[in-house]
Image 1 (cartoon, rainbow, N blue to C red):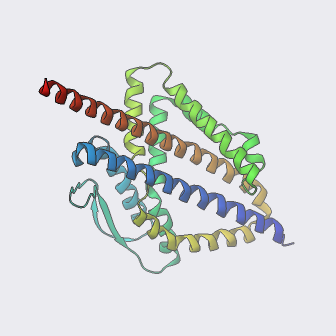
Image 2 (image 1 turned 45 degrees about the vertical axis):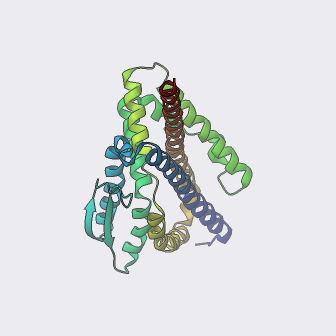
Image 3 (image 1 turned 180 degrees about the vertical axis):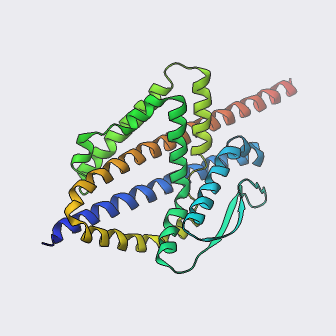
Length: 280
């Protein structure tokens, strides 16, 4: 069989850069937004102000770590799905360890980014229950977006522009009738989204799996090079859908931040008004 080095190389570069690029970029963005939202809430309204969203988002976050730790045969020592501690700021945790087998090392990557994976799955399921039409937008394949791939700056921009517009259209469609169903959907999406960002410890724990997973992807590309063109389109579609859902999570975090800032402004206005009335 003829070995097409250029085809294999371009496939590996595109898949590895787009996969790890999307995962780590959104991990950092969501973690940053999550950290800022938490800081605003705790400093202005106290630690317990985290509970309305954390009671749903934190168990999903920690359960995702636990499930994938078991799947990749890590030794799970302790699981706390929701154990808020005002002193440390911790809301929950999973303690696990592993032996140096290739399977368990690869698992480190998936366990570390598990909140992204399960968070995206929960958002997709919430859409399926409340607004199935939104998922149709997510599953719709934009040929312009995936035809060029992600290997060049221009094609990456076209891809991101397309999925951003489709994600925003999904939100507008879901909120078009302003019903109780909309309110419940927004609450679930926000509760999941503001706690789905992997922590810095999660990302550190994921790093050992990056090299192992990269080697496996390269080996698979070499072995199945005849199927690369077909598989590449499927991979682009999957990354596109994943990116759309993660964008929804980013929008939810920004919307939540806007609500927090509005609540802070109202609090300060009421405090100022009480001060004026007291002096009068």
